[in-house]
Amino acid sequence: MAYRITLIPGDGTGPELVAAARRVLEATGVEFDWEVQEAGAGVMEKYGTPLPDAVIDSIRTNKVALKGPITTPIGAGFRSVNVAIRKILDLYANVRPAHSLKGIPVCHDNVDLVVVRENTEGLYAGIEHDVIPDEAAESIRIITRRKSEQIVRFAFEYARANARRQVTAVHKANILKATDGLYLKVAREVAAGYPDVEFNDRIVDNMCMQLAQRPYEYDVLVCPNLFGDILSDLASGLVGGLGVAPGANMGHDLAVFEPVHGSAPKYTGMNKVNPTATILSGVLMLRHLGEVEAAGRVQAAVAAVIAEGRSVTYDLKASRDDPTAVGTREMTDAIIEAMG
Ligand code: NAD
Image (tube, rainbow, N blue to C red; front, top):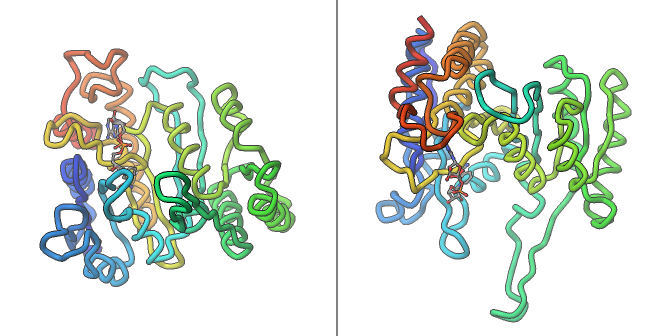
């Protein structure tokens, strides 16, 4: 029977990337019945909102979605559709793996990190206001015991299920004594229940330096919302950039898979950006569906195409101006061909 999946193309480069991932997923032989749902600035006029109820209803019904990035206006305009989807559906855990891939010119060649980011509170609670218009503004950072416990427990369960050796809690509890003090206290309490997984903690600024110098000493990083967002971009930079960084937003019984990167609007419609992050988000989805063999085939094909280095997009070449770089569609064709 075909899997019924909500498919959200998104905007900017999203539609071309989601089309690429869809082609690769269909080439595995696994059957999908896609329910396409539009969200973002493009649907504002038609529905009066960038996030129509139908999108949320579809994810609730199908339980699984593959999503392209959606643009958020900077400084003004509507609030993030991406954050809204995570909050409305309580997709509390954002899982962002970063693995080294052969063939990409980077500083470290043995990175294998997973950033587990709390996805629904922290500074992304979006509680902010002007104190004196144009002079001072305030944003409230919410950290709760319940959400902290939930995300740290998720990280330990993930570590156990995926044979990972260590969980590191990332925080700024030296300065943010109330909020991150609570987060760290709860993390230590939860860690005591998992004696089989090593636990440590790092202050976020030190964590950045450690990741730049010795990323191979770390394994699963569990972070409050904003730190997780920043560290997962840093982790993607260690393995080749946003073009290769997949992600999963996990709730209690719902899952939305999407690349770490945004809509890269300046490249819209140019057949230029790297489809790998969206395709690997599809691999995470296949594993979630239990299609482990198909997931392995796609992952191996992506790795083979990147290792060979011929049919890859500009961001995976040693020089960004390399005239031999191919487009989104051509790299996708090569991946499908490599799947045999
Ligand atoms: P971005 O991730 O869209 O792009 C930053 C840069 O990363 C690009 O200019 C490009 O150089 C590179 N890049 C990104 N994706 C790539 C790919 N697939 N292949 C090759 N290079 C790639 O970040 P931004 O410019 O800060 O954000 C653009 C918009 O996306 C904003 O409106 C932002 O709010 C939104 N955004 C959405 C999501 C989401 O949908 N989950 C996530 C992050 C940002």
